[in-house]
Length: 111
Length: 114
Image (tube, rainbow over all chains, first blue to last red; front, side, top):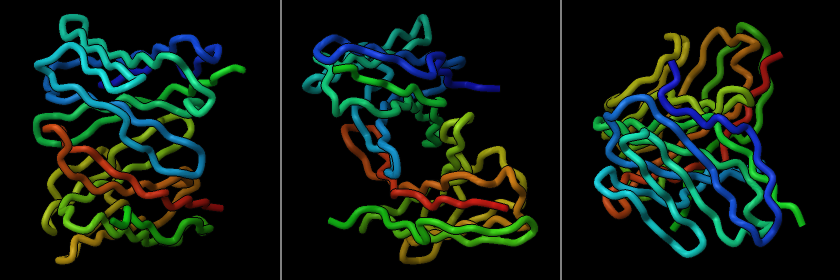
């Protein structure tokens, strides 16, 4: 049973516009929510995180929003750049420190 | 500071064989986690080791095992390989950043089972 769902396998966005990646989860036993980015032939790299006690965290072009009542997490990238083309994984940390990943969304930034 | 190092990067095995993958974490990191990445399933958690003890375990069969040494280096072993074990195996060590334990991944070991 999948606890972390990224329902869009892929997303295409025009360069300069906003990219919005979504993630839904099914239980509330998580204390941190994270986003990772992965290029081909490389391991995932950490992008941004948010604590369960907050609803927004911003770092440059990246903003993560957490809606606990809806069990929904989103990553906004604005403006989108060609180098943002990658696979994005949301990841949730359980209270025992185990980190569970979604299946990923492939983002294509179009010129 | 050196990153997470995984060896070998690529390997090919046949069904029924066994394989051992190695991971050297970032210096000072005591936790090492292993994940399996396949195209349809994303990153699936295998297990986590902390100070030579398995702290968490995913839902993989007993053919998948691991261990951690006193210098925090870790190995994972897969016995009696099956075609479905073909995947990218990622190792990550963790440190704390702003309260979240952030995983730093290696480049992975790509296993092909024929």
